[in-house]
Image (cartoon, rainbow, N blue to C red; front, side, top):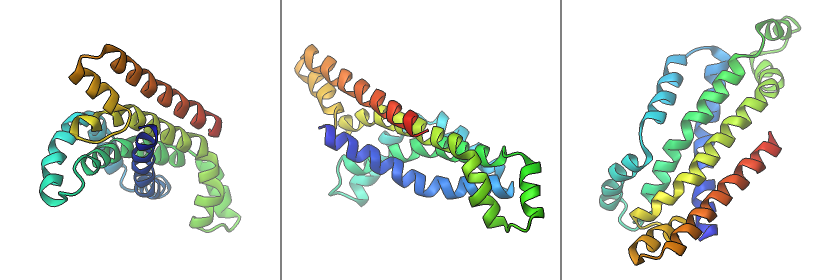
Length: 191
């Protein structure tokens, strides 16, 4: 169950990072599309993960019938992970001191060199903080997938409720909390 939980969590954060990091870098560097980033960030925080799962589940049953709990859980977690990664990336790059970037351009660095040799290293702490926030949220929320036939540590909680086994519920909750704390610690060390 721990491996299932880690599998879906890592996959959701990785796919979200592949999409959100380049978009955040582009928006932060060019200062274009800020409204889009803010809107996506706010919308992503406003949508409840359980609601997303409830909306996506019937669609995946219809269009991807072989992936009964995995696909809706992955989609919901992916959507949950995008806002903190996108927002922190664009804010981190955007907040690099304009005098520093102007000096780099004056020294002959291209826009690409300014982005990858100056802005990304200076924004790395905030970018990793966005990844940390996304990873912890995803690990904690992945338990909801068990309600929609996915495994992971949420299975202990759902099965505990179904069987009236309070020990199983508490054990599942403690395991999820421990995994979320370990994720937080690992990303804090990385940061």
